[in-house]
Length: 225
Image 1 (cartoon, helix red, strand yellow):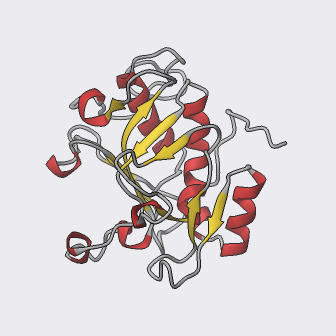
Image 2 (image 1 turned 30 degrees about the vertical axis):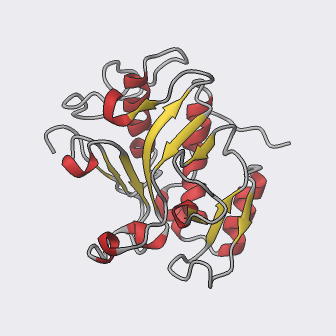
């Protein structure tokens, strides 16, 4: 049985993007992530298409308004995006989170066609909508992310906004901490917060990019940037 080490960061985003299908599938299996490999004709836009069949590190990833996740294209991920989320799920699980609600990974349709550089076109972006701990109500990004607060992530011995919260910390601290874990660990190439613009007022956008130079140098929308 694989046991996660909460003190160990995952590979950075650029290293993850270098994985081929076989290596990525093995990476998820080693971490006991349940998934199904999709045929390319089901998601030709996605280089390594998969669907989740269970939780990631004990955290369920759901689209709460979807009537059929087995058929919903929004629930198709590139395998490497799942791999990037593994250490984030470990971090959230250690703080009591049992569910992450999201809008989409893959996105199709007119809006995405008008944005050809969107990583949603490739199943390489995740729009995180809310987190839930146990039987508590889901804490949405729109209602709980403290805007105009995070100017930078604190160092390992510093306190303040973005410092690693305890298991019982308010959702506002949890969301700020998640932003800093993802970016300071180089786990994603982009992280857009509600401080970025109105289009991101109700979610956190995380993505990986093809051809990004190494090491990962994430862009994050801190307040004032």
